[in-house]
Length: 77
Image 1 (tube, rainbow, N blue to C red):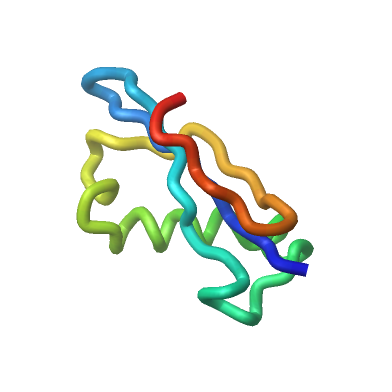
Image 2 (cartoon, rainbow, N blue to C red):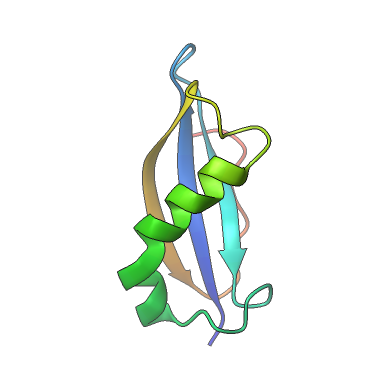
């Protein structure tokens, strides 16, 4: 079953939020739904640190979710 890790990131300056697909099982075959639920926080912290846009302190991770199947992120929330 495909799994998608989705993060909601919010700009601290403007309080705009956007959904971002962080990874899915098509990109990393080792991801299972259970592994997503257990290890998502550590993976998100590393992803945010390495991301060219969201790594600054101007963005914060508001929430995340593990979604069964393929997920298309919404532009604005």
